[in-house]
Image (cartoon, rainbow, N blue to C red):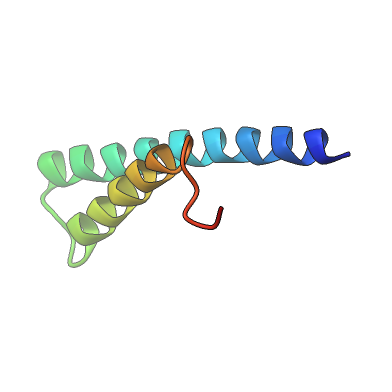
Length: 64
């Protein structure tokens, strides 16, 4: 049972990384093409930092 939970966590973490990077890059490209929206670059930056955080915690968990 515990292995299934670990596998699901890794799958969802990988999907989260892909989704955060995809959305962040899409927002940056959209801002470059059409001009940035009011909070668009901030949201893109937070998404990319979130993806980097998920990558950093892939091998190391601060919770043990």
